[in-house]
Image (cartoon, rainbow, N blue to C red; front, side, top):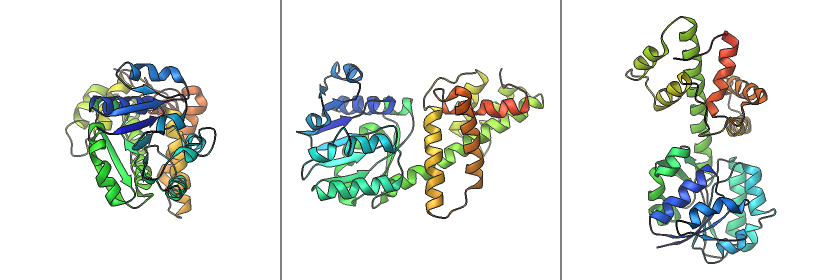
Length: 295
């Protein structure tokens, strides 16, 4: 059993903290909105009033927050996590952030004598709840090996990517591909609809071809049902698209396709769909074609 502090109980954090409890670990939770802790305390977690209280006796500290600003506020701002960490503790940031933010965290925690891993996750609400995430990790190999048993209840697979911030970098590379797949299924289904094809028949073909994808299956079926219930919010996808654009600019890498997709995501958020699922930006493509994909 390991003493773990889990900070931040959004869609992802709730699922991960619950799976750590199920695995038999001692988990102390904290969230800016204290009421979100209740389902976890009912499962045996301890609730802390502040981040400092949460990490006081922790061997491992984990957090998965919404963006770079939330991380900076927890570590250096109102949360002052940097003042609370102790030598020998291991800190895992599981947030999707810019690699520069991860570098800054690593330097700050190392100065305090703590170990740091950037360990963002692929997957959304269902994968977090069911322990089926894919975790990409940057940092010292020996620290990754040490915490790997803690990551097993959370993940289908984990992947050591190299020193900090290679986990954060890999997450942005992967999210670029996710954005392309959402755009691709949207464009394909809108074109098929305008051509008069039955969307169920189209999905039947996409399910068996050599270019099949779980994203095509899941998002395509939800689109036909007009289901945009949130697994991963469109506003957060815009945040990630902006991070990818910044990351590519930092490295002077052309990403023209990603730039075009980001514009569609922006339009979707400006239409008021930011709180809907990331796939909601496909409605921008529908508006442009004058059709709606539905069964």
